[in-house]
Length: 121
Length: 110
Image (tube, rainbow over all chains, first blue to last red):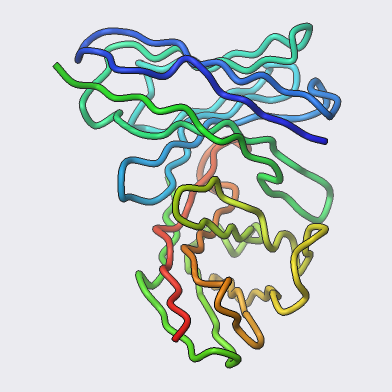
C-alpha cells in the first residue's frame, strides 16, 4: 500500500523558516518524480514544487521561487521542502504527491494527508 | 506559466449527467488529470490520460478532451459525488516538472 506521510508543519513567524518532510512507503521511491502542492484555507490547490527521480530536474511555482527549496533523499525514501522567508500568504495545508508518468498518461496518483503551515506573528 | 480555467460551481440532479470542464493552452499538449476532494480530505485521482480510471473509481466517471478543453463527465451522479473537482496538467510553458491546476469546481448534487 502506497503511503505518503507529511510532517514538519506548525506555527511560524513571518520571515522565519520551516522544513517539511514527506516519508514515502509502498512503492519504489527512486523511480518517481515527487511534488509539493498546497491549499490555503478555503482555497483551491496550488502546485508548489516538483523534483525528478534523481534530483536532476526541479521546478518551482513563481510564488515560491527563490524562497523554497525542494530536495529528496532516495536512500531514506523521503521528500523535503525547505521554506525560507515565510509570508502570511504561505499559510496552507501542504501535500506531498507522487507523480505517475507514462508515454500516454500523467497524473498525481497518490497524495498524503497534508501538514499545516501557519505563518503569523 | 500557463493557466487552467474551471467553472467555480456546477449543480446536477441526483441520477443525472453532469460535465465539468477545464480550459487552458497546456491542454493542447497534455491530457488533464482530474481529482475529487471532499471536505477535510486529501484529493483523490479520478481520471487521468485520455480516459483512464484508477482502481476503485466508479465507471460513471469518464474523461474527454478536445483542443484546449478537457471534460470530466459523471453519468448518473450520486449523492457521494458532491465534492470539489480539480483538473491539472503539465505546464507547457516551462520545464516538464512544472504543473498547473485549475481553480476547482464545486459540484452540488440536488
